[in-house]
Length: 526
Image (cartoon, rainbow, N blue to C red):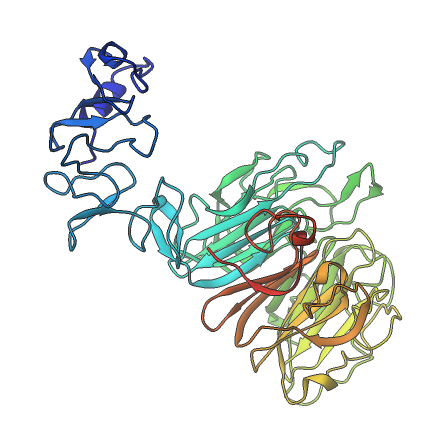
């Protein structure tokens, strides 16, 4: 039982305001009908039998005295002896091995309910957990980390100044420093969209938080949520990914297995008049705040299954078990890969006639770009590490050494500099892409704005072939979006680079203009 029992009981009895914090004499220290004492410090104390000396400072006392015992033999405060039978003030626990009240270490309460010592983070229930990171997820202006205790913390600011679109001017994630997401416990995997994030829990249910103006949280409402809310009826989630304001998941919905999407179906706003794209893949441009089934009547024929899923800002793609790739949504740069620039509200097959798929080699991954209304692109990764990209190429984002756009895959990414290393993961931002190789390195190409190529070069020149990032070794997971990239290494440390304008690259507010850009991978310290 926490200290200040008398105060807590009295506070629970009604709505009166607790007085008696700062004082000039004893009459200033009256808590309802309980008379306190004005201490020489100028702060009120009240009777508490758990304190040696019988008095404890008011919870509102300043000078770091709040909630501590009064007297020569005080107890219950941080680094003080535990009172009575192991009683400590709020946000402290009695470390029995030393007999003092402590906070901030792994397994202990977060100090002041928010902060922890080096090597730990303030997790669910305001308890400090290990700062070992299992996975990073990157959005437009925010980032999130999945920790080894299966909790999630996020930081940054997930808003955009769109006065003509209600809700987008408000931030849901609004902190330059990491804070624990309420309800995001027992998490196995996370994916960030532009302004919302979702987590697959260990029971394979899906929980989301952030913006919800188009129903992208999938819970049947359009109410934003800072806490994780469950997508009702969605179970057995195996794949999921987030786009600009929509989400897709391979799962069962109300008992029916399939590929499901929800959120914004089109792009009908002042900047994109009439751009009804059908991003949900169900032959409609309507928004949906609950999952709707993607039309796989052709793609899923003959018992084929989805191997890989990627949702970009304006288009989405899947790779199937028969080594065919299907995409839907915007196609202004040929990003759907069917040889045209026509948008589609249902999946259309990518034309793979221009590439050779060697025997026993499969298409293992598809990756869609994000962040722009136009000039989008798509890549696929083969099981032998070969990568093909198509769509916009004005910044060298197709990685083939040139800047020629294509509406279907024909040229492979130039991997000569990689030597014998094989690409095993792809991620994409607006005009840049990165790849993780089997030797633990990261290679990036495309536009280097905000240093997102990660080569410690302030020049924003394009790099049409992969460049190896500095610093990183032994990388196990990678993510990027818009102008930010993050990676987790084998020691479970998190590194980020690119824009830090909203504190997203360093998990703290930039100190000055120069600090708003991070030119090479830099460890995020929790």
